[in-house]
Length: 236
Image (cartoon, rainbow, N blue to C red; front, side, top):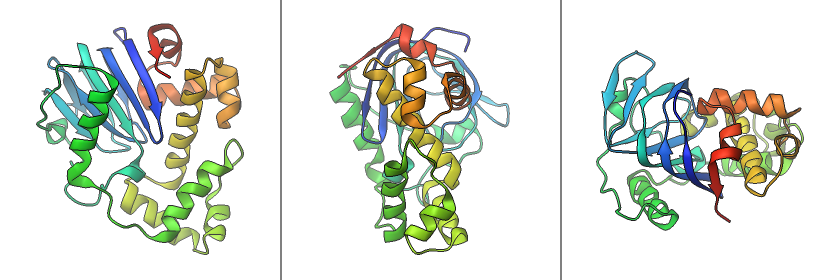
């Protein structure tokens, strides 16, 4: 990360919200859908092409870099289970495809960001999913902080591993293991928001230690989790 992040953040079921200064970040990939808003934003995709845009909707598991951030932006990470990435969703290729047109609220608080995310996702509301996939999502969350293995989940929902793996890729836009990692990250961030140390948050979410959590956050968010503790005000 080459610039500072400073602002507020909030954890809600399946979502991380952030408002404030958005810094530059190296190439990384969230295991979640990201909505990013800021008048000065310049994003780069894995193809190396940089594009300026006021708002971007980035599919899950898509490499991207923030070349230039913004002093007053909004960001949301959304559980892929809350979106429909199979139709009418931006492709993961060039950053130019991620541009979305939104009316940015003058009030940059949590209620406004929540409503904005709901509005943007309104066109991609998840269709009725396979019951086994819905069950799998609940089972994965219940397994934490223990291991969540594809074989165990598939057996519990009475489905073959290959079929369940295909459903995750087809409907969530990412494989089973990255989805589990996203759920673990959400649990860790929730723990951090309650005042836990990195070590405590890591163990709560099933990471082996603080270093393991730090590597996961850096890989998925382009920055070490220390900025979350030092520069972010968590909303209850």
